[in-house]
Length: 198
Image 1 (cartoon, one colour):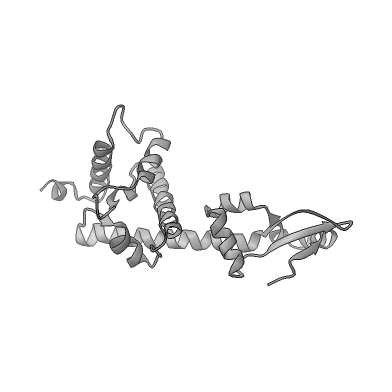
Image 2 (tube, helix red, strand yellow):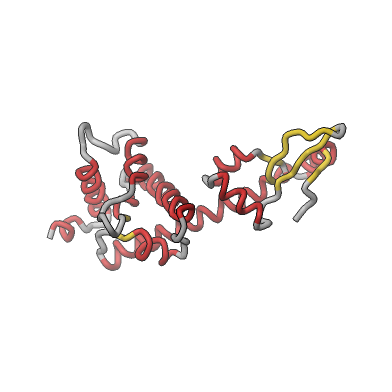
């Protein structure tokens, strides 16, 4: 770990030499990594992030995390999301699987923890990342086929995402109808629509 306190003038010299060494506040770190404040604090406690407190004339001023460290977390999140995508993509292509249970058929095969509430929220965020990307590229929500084992339906987070995307929900469309329509869009994209109808 680095010294938790850095003189503001030394920091300015550091940034002048290496702009990647600049500091960003916790709100910007949350935006870049799409991690919660508690997850960032956890990474800080694990020594994977260094919060720098700046001081000038003996008074504390705004500090932040090193941008370089934040970008490592950002890339790790992207890599985890891609591992989840590969599990879903392979299941659809190879096995013709119609739905995936959150824990045993999506999170665990991708090596993503799913035991605690923060773990489940984080996994939901990965699914949201994937669906936002698939919606932008193909107008499908890939996470529609990842469901709760007990209900056979996606979580409320899926429908919140649907409602945030223009055109993702038809007028007066129920959650059930919306879910199955988006599943069919995924099946059509993967050439499984005829199989899904059997």
